[in-house]
Image (cartoon, rainbow, N blue to C red; front, side):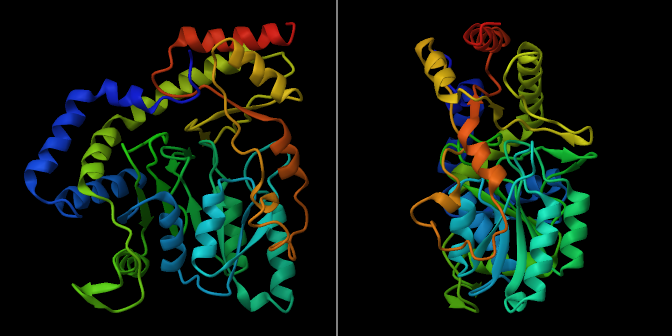
Length: 375
């Protein structure tokens, strides 16, 4: 069996180090926050290229806290995509804000920045213009929204930029890493991520001192001093066991991302010339390949054939957020089009992708796909 993802493989690879790290924390007697968390915050922020890292309980709350740290609150409008994990929208709603859907670019999986510009301009000129506050740019599958045009649109329309980097650990544009461009960024350490915990976890990164201070207050009840809440906050703390595990993973992250890129190169080569559309990677992008996502008109048939041959696949994501029951019809008033989003949802398929996937197994996947297509 070739699974679509295999988080246990990273544990097996580093078992001795990880077991020792967990025992170190257990022996320390410090089980909430503490030096292990502070060390990981500093190391991760430095790796990303930000001045501050604020560790939190999960990626969804990382987006929420990042938004709140740049001033997003009740009644505000936040521009984002519907082709994303529902966590993005859930975080916006947790702030009391409302999402405004922007379509993905034709032939890509990330936000259409030209359409973002048009939507923001229309909103600013209308009765809801004062409510428009921020953009959540989702860097998806290990790819990025092109930062130059994105930043220019945000500046022109006076929008705060939060990067949702849950799937972009180690992605870069012209050598500068995802998470270092915006006013704040949010990362998830869910076990299947490029940098995954053995549980849940998240991080807010920023180079804005005021945003960092506010994020630290929000994550722990608004405390400036223990038991005294200066503002309304939440309980969103990364525990030191996960921090110790993530510190080990961070050391291995670039090596493992390189393995992902090697697997992607095998997929690219093996699928060239077929009826499947492989990921487009512009020259300035260093792709992190959280997922390797193809497009095919017979997605369900291909997935069934691969499953019958012992190969796992996934769909990230089968139903866009705007079409899900909890969100259907609620936030469409300012949306211009979601044509590309809906097309993508109908034909995407995630192939097996994790650093320990062997090259032989990757070639087996491409051979089975070509056989299915009659190539």
